[in-house]
Length: 295
Image (cartoon, rainbow, N blue to C red; front, side):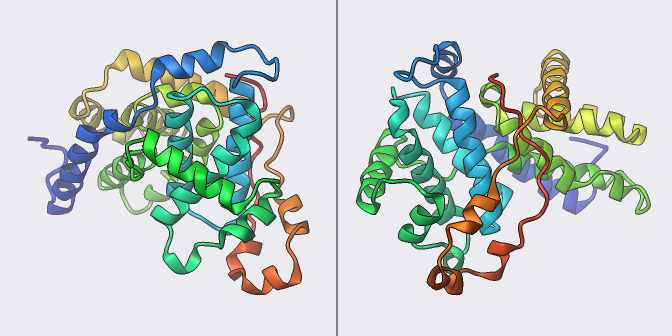
């Protein structure tokens, strides 16, 4: 069907992509719910975009601290937004909701031996609620999301698109299309509630289009257009979201942004807890700054 991708590896990747595209709408947050959050005034009584974005920034700090994958972070954001877009959550409960979504994502995505105890997670995150509070919140979240934890998120479509496009680059040019850099861009977008309204395929393609233009990988133009058509994404949507991604990344790199404070997490770890943590908990790499302003 797609002459640009003819190898058996490419065909297998396209099969996986097709499966993701068929599923992605099932795991989208409710757009009307997200718009209500975006339009809410910051009076301490309603969930707002600013509060949501701060919570996601904290989840990113925890992800980096524990050495968890982008898949875990992306899923935790998806669970959080799906829940917030369905339920009216008071700001005072946001921390419990966010950490519970994060823990559900960790248990779903990470290897069992790397999953921290809930008590350690609570202590490191410095929240005041209890493990029992978390257990009750997890049950509420699961019930409201119909027990659908594993979701099709933008990280998976981004990874598949990246693998397909690499087949159209020479070995010398492949390093220019860095998956790590693309994932960093995706994490920046996750920290803005507005990007949760975009389908995973649209957001992933928009990030890729922008990066390919910036890296001047003109040889990927045709392959990118083929993937766009295969994914049934319009050029208008790509252009719109690409501009939003570009604006987000420009602010992401500016001095007006706050960094996820992983240092405060390091301070709270006791000697006993430290002995139980895997080494990667302390290998916190440099993080670009995260935008603080609302969407």
